[in-house]
Length: 294
Image 1 (tube, rainbow, N blue to C red):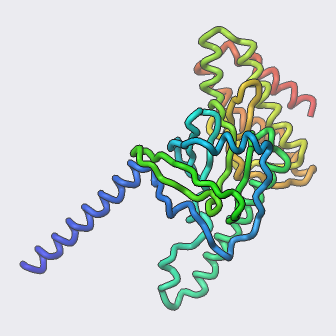
Image 2: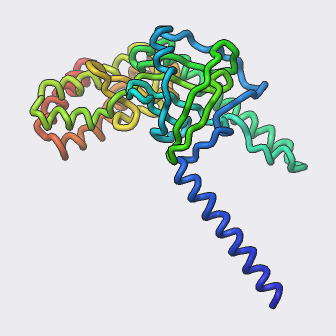
C-alpha cells in the first residue's frame, strides 16, 4: 500500500511539474535569456553585415523592444516606436541538447546529431547572408549580427509577454534587425474598407513582382508563405522571413516558376475570393499574363 501511495505521489508531483512548465512556456512564449546568447567556438565565424545606415541603426537600438511573437527560428520583438523588429535567433536550433554529452555509448548518434545541427546552421546563416547581400531592400534589413563581437558595446532592453524587463548584451547575441511591416492581408483589408481598390491592386502586383524578382536573381525560397512571411511597408512589399533562401540553377528555376507561382498565390486567391472578390479578376489577369508570357 505504501508503494502504491508513493507511486501516486510521484505521478502527482510529475504531473504538477509538467503542468507548471507548460504554463510557464505558454505564458512567456517560450522565451528565456539562455535560449538566445551564444559563445560557441564551433559556430562558423560570419562577421556582422554592415548596417545600411549607422544613424538609423543607432536610432533603432536606442529604445526598448516588446515581445511580438515566436517563429521556428527566432523570437521576435517590436520596437517602442513601432518602426523596427529585432529577431533573436534560437540557440537550440544549432546545438544538440547538452544531456547527450553525458550519456555513454552513443558517440555515433551524437556525432550524427552534431553534423545535422551544423548543417542547419550553415544553411540558415547562408540564407541570411543571401538576404542581406541580394535582397537587403526587399527584406527591409538594417543589420545582421551572426557571430559574437566586441564592437557594439550595447545593451538592449526586452519586455517579455509577462511585461518583465530583461537586459541582453547584443555583442553576444545572434540577431537580425529589420523595419517592421504590416501583414499584407490586413493591409489589403484596411484599404478595401476605404474603397481604395487601386491601392489594393498595387499591393497584389508588388507581391507578384517580389516573387519574380527572386527568380530573376537566381534564388529559391523554402517558405514563400505570403500571409505569414511578407509585409507591406509604406509603398512597397517586403519579405520578412529571410531564413529559407538558397541558390538555384537558371534551368531549374525556369521549370519551377509557373508551378511555384501558382502554388504560392493560391492561398491568396482563395482569401481574396472569400473576402474581397472584386479584386479577384485583377489578380487572375496578372497571373495569367505571367504564365502566358514566361
